[in-house]
Figure 1: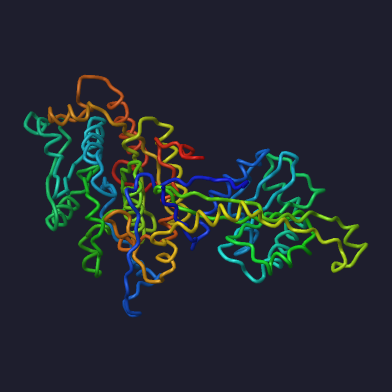
Figure 2: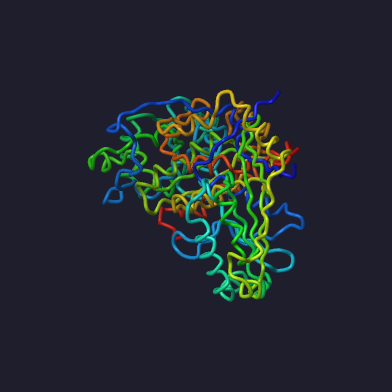
Length: 240
Length: 282
């Protein structure tokens, strides 16, 4: 049996290429316009993509579940709607449909019940929530992504017709037992747990016999270096 | 289950990755703050070109001697210094040439190492006007020397000496990490570091360019260093033959992909690092 270990993320740097690939591999595939797209210092979306119909899709990823995630989503959505002409000018080679608000994708390691309950009132646009797990298998890193909730856009008329509390709140899709079991199976085979080691604040990172910290390379830099695709290797060789 | 799996890249060439616990007291804990860069930009005169690599990658000495020779053949006064104490291969690679008449006439080879390197570089520096290029075959260990004082900077100890660096990288995760660390260290001392990159050990130009582009992106974002692409070097049997004959490949009679690649590298170097050492603005 191959050992599959869950790897907790301390940096989004390693997550972004996976998210980018996730959009490229969507059905139908999205066109990725930008990664780490910043509106202003410290504010932006992690991946900005375009559907074949010309609708913007913005992904926001988190390493944990921040308290202000709904507020953050709304502020980013507001910026993109208000600045649609600017976004179009920034990407002149594509045609963006300004009549539809950007679709949002929220990526979290786990969608907790408290946030799940709150997000059902998020009706400003289509929102999908994905859970992800980064795992290590045979010295390969793999990202498991599963859509666990979908909140459709109810439109301005629906919002005006009923107060938010009375609005027909969409029922989020609960994760299936099969999905939960499969993910749990992945994360339970830990011997020893890489997660425990990474969570320890006092660690040295070694790659083979090389002490990366002594070289002056930070963990974030290391993750980016390890994510460089080296020639002669088929990135999809181990896809199952 | 509808989960999608996307595979990561980069760990394949690492035989194992592990973490070990290391307990340190707060006073010993490393800080994010790097030592401040020196107020005075140190460095040897610009004719010096350090050919280096993250580790003992195959190709560094081959690149150094062949590029130097090709530059000399093009009429540039070129000196070569072998600073690799553990594997001083330049004399091996150029042995037959050195034993024969000095061909071309404007080529000199010196062999030195460790602390003597400083004296050698300093002496060569005094005669800098005589050289368009001083090509130094420099192991990465040289770049771990930290200049500790202004006096050390004046004596031009690497990495303070290395304002112009030709980095040879191969498609290996450890090599890239070490190469990145070397650039990071050197860039701290040179706000105007000139960096060229040669990709060795790849079979095709587009693969080399793709690897370079990723590395360029990372160096640009993280270190604000924009290297120039200086070509690639595939694995060739002809390299082994040139070592056996102790004759640099570019002098060989046989036309080959190897010779073409080495000449392309020399041309890129001559273009990027101008003769006589005038700084090239990017």
